[in-house]
Amino acid sequence: MKTRVPHTYVLLIGLVILAALATWIIPAGSFDRVVEQGREVVDPRSFHPVEARPAGLSALFLAFPRGLVEIAEIVFYIFIIGGAFGVLDKTGVIHLAVGKLSMEADKIAENVKVLLDEIVRKKPADAKGDFIQSVFIAGTMTPGVKIIMAQTK
Image 1 (cartoon, one colour):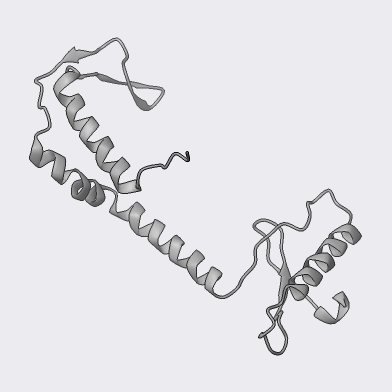
Image 2 (image 1 turned 30 degrees about the vertical axis):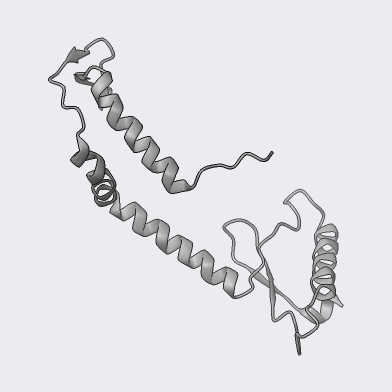
């Protein structure tokens, strides 16, 4: 029998409920902060109890909206990056490694040729015209160099 992982929302809500229950069980406390070498750090020997404020039902339901407001910039950034990758995927862009810096240039060229041959071989039957529009090769964080397709045939 295959074990199924619960849905993401079930896991998130379960973690929020667990955290809310923990506020009723774990004693509340605080640590003092000290400045060391120009940085504010927690003094591990300075724990002292503070008045407990266990999470109620309203705090449980407001945890998600308040959390999203706190990290709105990060969420927005993730949506933008995710959208960019979605656009790249929809346009048929293929990202993969064909070599590494320590390889000889002719070995990398051979890898590119094998890759292009395989892409053309797997071309859908209903695809008309030139299946590969253009090919660029680039190292990490370097500008791309266009490969002239006539040289790869």
